[in-house]
Amino acid sequence: MSPARRRGGPGPRPARGQSVRGQSSRGQGPKARSGQPGKPVKPGKAARAANVARPAKAARPAKASRGSRAAAPKAARAGRGPRAAGAHRGGPAPARPAGVRPAERDRGLGGDHVEGRQAVRELLLAGRRRVRELLVANDLDDAGIVAEILDLAGEARVRVTEVSRAKLEAAARTDAPQGVVARADAVTPVDLDELAAPRQGRLAPFLVALDGITDPGNLGAILRTAECAGVTGVVLPRHRAAHLTPTAVKAAAGAVEHLPMALVGGLPTALGRLRDLGVWVVGLDGRAELDLYAADVLGSAPVCLVLGAEGKGLSRLVRERCDVLVRIPMLGRLASLNVSAAAALACYEVLRRRASA
Image 1 (cartoon, one colour):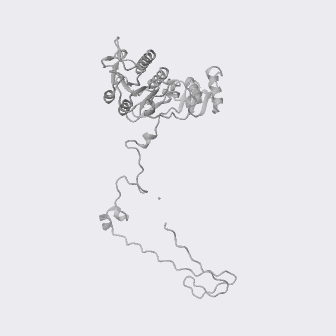
Image 2 (cartoon, rainbow, N blue to C red; image 1 turned 180 degrees about the vertical axis):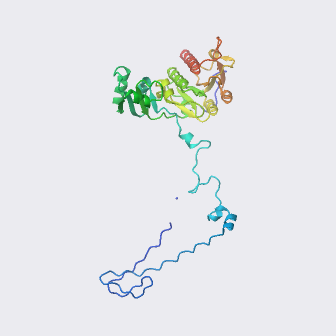
Image 3 (tube, rainbow, N blue to C red; image 1 turned 135 degrees about the vertical axis):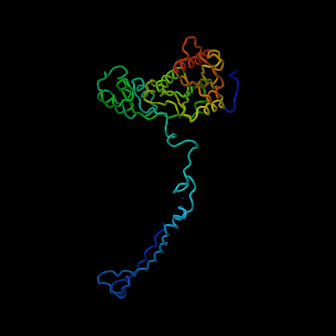
């Protein structure tokens, strides 16, 4: 296949009746008051105006017998017509995107809890997210990368709290926080079309899409490799996939601060959209006939590498959305590589091709 192929598109109570009071003065005679005519007004006090007769209260409807109540529809007893399914008492139901539940729509990539010295250092260096607090173990030596972290936190006016090692490890969510824990705003996902848009003066989009990667350690390792190899964006499915947990962020060693990431509802649909935008979708599949090093679409054309989970590989629908399927040559007795290792090989092959193009 040739990268010269082009596709469509570069892709809104009732007000109460007002009481009317008359204007009477002292000693001007009796006033009508609650059925007591002729009662004089006490001297020295201002005469009150004659009360306006209040309208009689509407008679309450007679209660229906239990039998008749049972026979009448519940909506009719309440004095209203039947309510359509899904209608709200206060008006029409609020619209929401089809197929997206509110909880799913609000759930993002994560990444608000950062541990590890390298990850925290890159978080402060990038300055793309607000850091609310930095916890530091009080037994750390103020030298090397720790001193740099403290200096960066001071420049960014981040609150630094020294705690005991026991308290820091209690606040940590990984096995080795390395004496530093940062609490920051979550990573904001970008739009898929933005990832695929070519930018003036830069190389063509180089994307990585992950299909069913559920191990946060593998996700972090892939993100670290991808950032080092010049990947311009990562596509993550919303469901059945690892997101930016503390383990993934620590393993990424700061790559999450520099890699734009899109969160998509369905990966097959997202890959179809990328194809419409002129991006070649290349899937890594151990059953493919074409060798990775023989594929001619990995050069200067916009490309998206798709990696599947270990064991399962690419799902059927994802495989069908790929333009090309390639495999990594395996000469040993083992049948597959770790997905992060496969990602490294494929990403650097794209880098090699682009460097020599």
